[in-house]
Image (cartoon, rainbow, N blue to C red; front, side, top):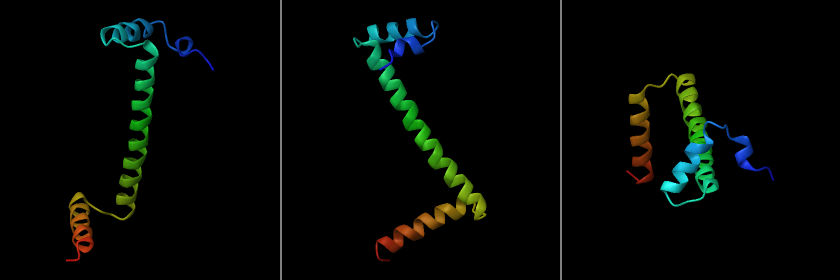
Length: 79
């Protein structure tokens, strides 16, 4: 496996090391957490993008969505 520090710019590496020291962690732990958060954010970005595209395709407004969510919840509750 590739050493992650070889993929980090010389500008960022000292900041990562300083952050790790301040948190009593290893630099690779800080990097792993940052990458995990980035990937999670990308997943949400995809989901939100899909939602916006579908709303536009269906010509829905925010009010329509709020109403649809309320109706669906009522249906699930058996109302």
